[in-house]
Amino acid sequence: MTKEIWFDMDGTIANLYAVENWLADLRAENVRPYAEALPMLNFSLFARLLNRLQADGWKIGIISWTAKNGSEAYNLAVEMAKRAWLAKHLPSVEWDEIKVVRYGTNKKEACGGGILFDDEEGNRNTWGQGAYAPQDIVEILKGLRG
Ligand SMILES: [Mg+2]
Image (cartoon, rainbow, N blue to C red; front, side, top):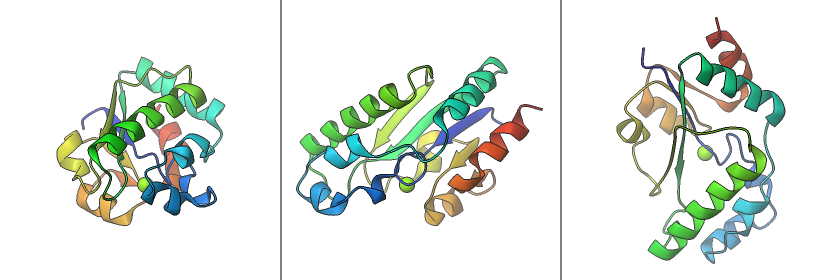
């Protein structure tokens, strides 16, 4: 199997949908909800697991969509906000790749393969084998350490 692990952000590691007025702000092309979203799991544990898996030869990446119907300028601002969020909340993690792609992009085609964690069932179904829901992140990552 490809030793790659990909993480969605919104609803998977970043609690965007719990930010008040998130949808109205995204429609108004404001990046505030992306910046203010809180981590969805214990990030000190998460960072430690990621660092160890990288040492074991796993590549780790982010595959995240921009906002639905976002303009080019807003999509770029969203990418910057997401990169800043990762640097702020997971400072010890050196991602092998961070892909912030247009809303609706086929994640399997964008990443190629490996493991995907994503809160959207449609993305998991398109990915096929190796796709998991966010609540399985810690258990699966611990299991990969062997
Ligand atoms: Mg998501």
